[in-house]
Image (cartoon, rainbow, N blue to C red; front, top):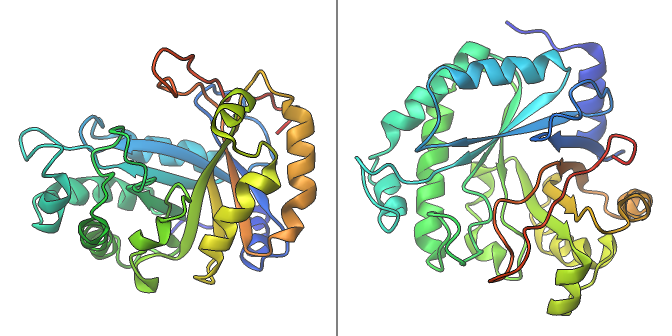
Length: 283
């Protein structure tokens, strides 16, 4: 059985007690591999493109950095099972249980602490994700089915937690799966001055996160900003400094995970692709 290091235990317990907000990173750019101030490291796994045998090694690499892994599972459809349109109903019908079982066998081989984040940002209906939908009843049924099987296949492993993680839009709580299906609540939060001005959105951390926090806090669970990014052309250092200073105002805010990568798509037709990359001197 894997034994947690004393420093990582203190990191985690501090956050769980809501006495501090710890930091984490999704490090696509691989610039935070030796940083010692990261409590979590996020990894993304797609149902339709993962290579068997890779999950355990990724988890062990994160553990070697003295961090808890957050596995963001992206349940894109597998064509031999169904289509994007039938994904959620196929999950409810148990057609993806073998996929869940195979992934869990690799997680069991790792046998360490982790957080599982399944089907994130489900209320963003712009065609980016197979699992995003206006049918929140169907999403909830699929989420509950998937998490039930993850819990079944990972039973007996201590320190496995489940993070329900919408974008944090005004309708996000329509998709809430129930207290027994998630340990933590999360959201995504990106600041891009050019886009925010176009959309009439606030640009500062408090203006962006405050409404999301109010929506999620009603569940009484620890809250993660599971993806946080500031566009590289913005004054990142000043933005982060102001954000960190405001963390104590949100007592349930447990962790902020920075998305250290360019985005994969443009945010509007013909627009540029935003870049959230950040330096270790800022985050």
